[in-house]
Each structure stands twice: as structure tokens, then as C-alpha cells.
Length: 70
Image 1 (cartoon, helix red, strand yellow):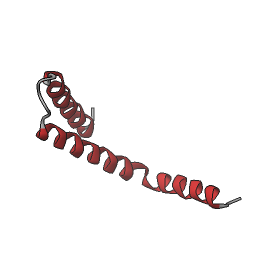
Image 2 (tube, rainbow, N blue to C red):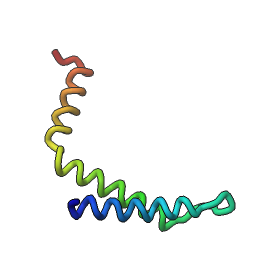
Image 3 (cartoon, one colour):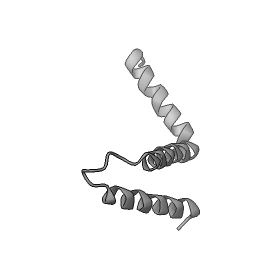
Image 4 (cartoon, rainbow, N blue to C red):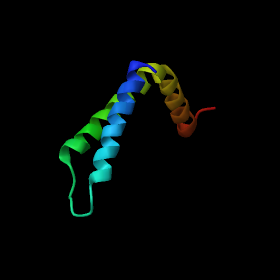
């Protein structure tokens, strides 16, 4: 298991435990939502670092086909 996978599993277990403890009487946990937002941004950054060029090519191709490409 890589360091990134280990951190993801650790953060995910924290989020699950906090969400499982939230009952209908609670309105929400601001630090929990901040953690979810930071995790999402981290996953997007990691995905972009690994597949950024491919994602850019896919996006450009989709836009070219929509606007009037070949």
C-alpha cells in the first residue's frame, strides 16, 4: 500500500466514523465538511498529476467535436 493510499484510507475512515455518529438531531460538523472538501481537492490534484495530459486531450477533443470539428 502506497503512502497516498494509506492516507486516503485513514482519512476515509475518519469521515465514515464522523458521519456514522451524526444523528438527525445534529445539524452538521463544520470540521468534517472541511475535511471532505480538502480530501476532494487532494484527490483531484492527484488525478490531475497522474493523468493531466490525457484529461486535457479528452477535453479538447470533446470541445472540438461539439463546436464543429471533423
